[in-house]
Structure formats: C-alpha cells, structure tokens
Length: 229
Image (tube, rainbow, N blue to C red; front, side):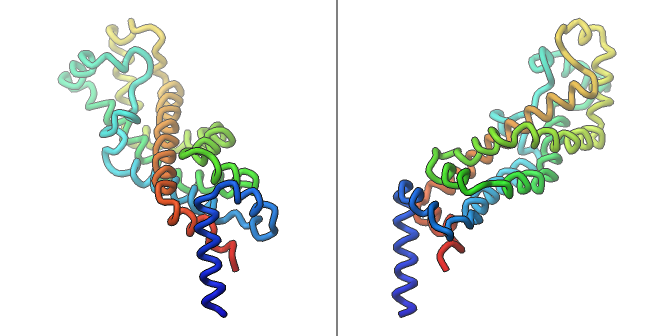
C-alpha cells in the first residue's frame, strides 16, 4: 500500500512538472498553499548567484556584469592608466568590482527575506512563467527595496577597500574634472555601484533559475517537496 502511495506521488510530481497548466488546479487545493517548494528554488537560485558573484574577481571577470566607473569615466582608460602609474590610484575598476563582490556575499539574507514574502499566486506565476520568471518577480516586486538594503553593504565595502579615497584623488585632477556629467561624490559612486551590482545579481539569479528549469523532473521534485504528504 505504501509503495502505491509513493508511486502515485512520483507520478503526480512528474505530471505537474511537465504540465504547467495543472498547477492552476493544484493552486486551488489547501496543500498548494505551502509554497515552500517554489520559495526553495528561487532561494537556491539567489544563493547560488550570490555565492558565484562573491568569489574573488567574479564581477570583474564577467564583462556582462562588470562594475564600471560612472559616466564618461567608463571609457577613460588612458587617464586611469596614467593615475595608476603615477601612484595616485590602483586599479579602481577592480576595486569597485571587489566591493560589489563583498556586498553580494552579505546580501544573501536580504534576498532570502524578499523571497519569503512570496505569495501562492506569485509562486504559481513563477512556476508557469518563463525561464527567469522568478528573477523577474524579484526585480519587479522587490527591486527598489532590495537596492535600498544592499546600498549600505556596497557603501561599507567601498569604504573598506579604499575606493572613495581613490575616486576623490581622481576628482582632484583637472583632466578628470573636465569630464562633464560625472558624479564623483561618495553618494554618486555608491549609487552607481549599487545599481550595477543589482543588475548583475538579477542577471545571475535569472541564469541560476534557468538552470533549475532545464531539468523538468528535478524541478518537479524540488518544487513540490513537502506538498504531498
């Protein structure tokens, strides 16, 4: 009898994983109110993304998410080389990316908290949505709030790594000062790095989520773990 129940659960899980429309029916049942499976997948995707980005040099190594100086300074490589050779700065771009990596490491509970706010309706939408539906959900519903909470982490990392001091040295150079539209203040730099770091984090969460979705059977096991008793 127990074997029959177990087989039935496995069959149901596979069917639900491969037939998203069945989730609408599942959502109407009391058991489906337990959205921990959906939260688990999105939480794992978030953790994996932040773990990868917190690895030394990870932000800088990936040009798709590399943190750059704000405004025209993004392309002022010749000037930055000059300041580095003159001993005024080190590699500022790498410093900014290291700061983003440190912030990512500290941001895991921040993202987990946002994911814990996932509703049943949101969960069904994520399961039946596209490959990055979960990442899109976080960006849409919690992006601004997450950025506010991540910003102090970025600020702390920038301070610890000496990024503010280096950028202030840049701001004192006449050649840099002539580059209009560049906010070299501490707040301006913090905002720029935070915005870029958040974009990179969401990009990586989307990739991790897509990886979970690439194996429907595995996805089904994880999504519905705990729903069937």
